[in-house]
Length: 217
Image (cartoon, rainbow, N blue to C red; front, side):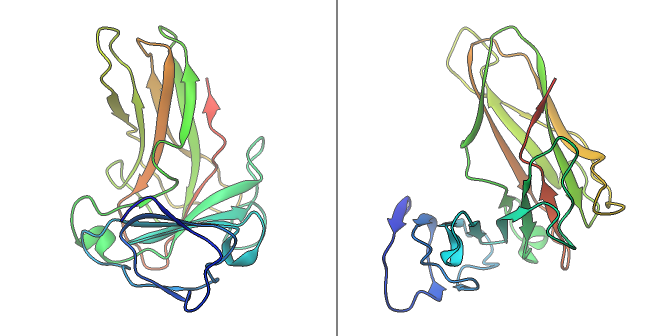
């Protein structure tokens, strides 16, 4: 099933075979488990590991086509240094798999759990929401996307999807925070805007880093 939580588990926890979404707490998932859904074309698997490998505050999302990992800015190569004014922890998308590019069109790696990053916005007030990015490989606007859901109409309750259109070039060094993804939104209703960042391109040994501190202007 999906949406299950596991904790205080004993026995073989080095291998996992799940579908849908599973939450693991208490640091029970080891540092490098075997993900049996890895690179399975069309598979949709998310294992959220809290206090990963028994390290308090460590977070990792195991997915079918790559992982999203909480890392400390400035911890050393290849992790970027902290962006001026930016967050002191980053999101790393890595362990990318070949079917991310070569399989189903909707194969992807998520930076965070869907609909969990949200900002309250006021109707009729246009703002731009920007997330800064570093990447070890080049990405077109179709290969990495910032997506946002919001209410564009005051006449109904339907959600409207908007996507970024920026391309990302290869970073120059660990301090290169010139690249970003952004969307501009003028909601018709006061309410939540929900954000996601999705990666669709495989690169051997490739890594994408996201500063999760959104810049609003």
